[in-house]
Length: 60
Image 1 (tube, rainbow, N blue to C red):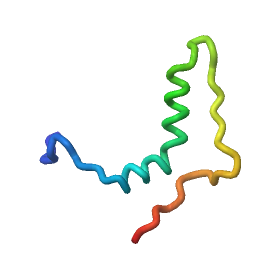
Image 2 (cartoon, rainbow, N blue to C red; image 1 turned 90 degrees about the horizontal axis):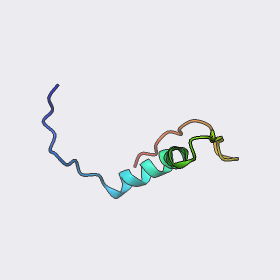
Image 3 (cartoon, helix red, strand yellow; image 1 turned 180 degrees about the horizontal axis):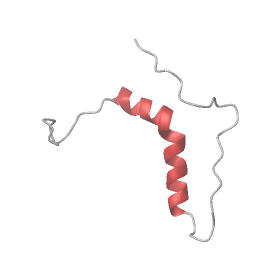
């Protein structure tokens, strides 16, 4: 498979904000799980009051 994309794909601040909003908690949990001691099993629970699933993106 080949692509014609440039080596670096520009990402806007708005795109980074969207990633942080929708994936921030998941990324934080993955990082915490990765650095936890091997003998323990981390328990990940959703934050109270947050809706389950990904809400639709708002379009301008």
